[in-house]
Image (cartoon, rainbow, N blue to C red; front, side):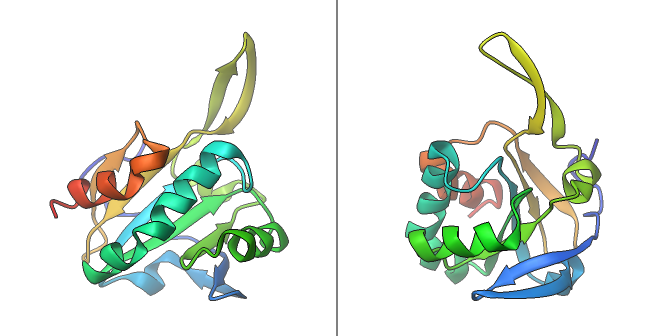
Length: 155
């Protein structure tokens, strides 16, 4: 499992940037503060609240030079619908093969209403300009996530 002070793990994937699909690497953002957040699914209540909170506070985050990147197993096509419907200004990554989820250790056994299943554990990794993980937010508050990110970066 990745820990604070570890180097961020690079990956190549399909990124949705400004409404366009691009194959990129996380290291393309090196030199900037990165809030890399993993969430279970587009268009679901908790994930929508989280995305809307980040959208509503996006100017404050970017004014502190923070790049927001969301990762889920949804295809780019669904990411496009999600970003258009909710007017999301930040980048989303499609991780259909779960390589990025597994790389960061967030694809785990979960329990809900007595049933066990595999799923994405909502987690945010805060990465500094030198590509080092400086904080990990495990207890994400979906309706106040931007404040957690700012606090996690010490801002």
